[in-house]
Length: 420
Image (cartoon, rainbow, N blue to C red; front, side, top):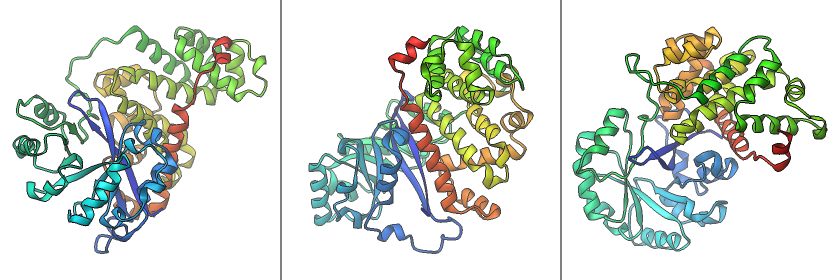
């Protein structure tokens, strides 16, 4: 598919993810900049197809999703193609939709089926007035210095609508907006939740559980680690122990033969243990961070791995996966990244990428971060320089989402618990 798509989280003032919306770019943003967008004339929605293929778990953790909809698509029976419950879908109307009688009638039709609607505020209340009965959300792309005042005016006119502020870049701007007594913004979009902890910030003491996780990471980071040391460390955390035995029993054809941790470790092998520990421990470290941080780190890791061959690093997939996984370590440990990597040992290339923001690995990480933010011109520029097609990027990201969905849908059964 010649389309770049990324789900972007919408946060409440308490940093809880409420929903996601799909940001997208058709084709290469540089090459296609002077051409008309074929999506504007499409009867079928590629966003619905993407949602159906990937699944709501991977895209939004089963939270509501905002899907871009054009005026043409409003006059199709697009609901017949949607494979998720209507109450999870919000149609985000293109800002060129004209709210005439025919459009209002179609909105009434879809509302009756259980779908919700969102629209962009373009500066005039009268533009949205015909949709007052059906609008559940209003997106505001407004300069931050005007957002407080305008959000209050919009809320007064549309008291039942949820106000969404887009492109809030800095954490300080988010905090200021939340604390302002006159703010009527309900949800926030932006990069404010992915904040590097300043070097001069006060380091918090780590909980004993997090210390154990870091010890486990350092045990398996050795080239030829000792299985007994690994199993001794993992026994100190019941949840990780259960997950480990579940993994081994799934991989084993003769599950009843796996009788203890040492046998399980030997059966799985060092390479698979290292990858599992990195994923499971990073997930556990994120437990008291916003849930989006956990999701972000895992999808980012797999996306980095999937891009390896396109950046001529096909034999470095494992390290690129680890780099993506540990790229939020400063956030989850609540300490400067320089201090975090004094506790967790990683290969020099990963250290340089994450701490110094330099080296070949960093070029992959930077690309992935730009993709997450929907900075399509930069993505398109790199794609041209490296001769990467939009379809290849689309596939690499889509596969990362599907992998994440499969990962989070794994469940622990009674046999696994008994095996521990």
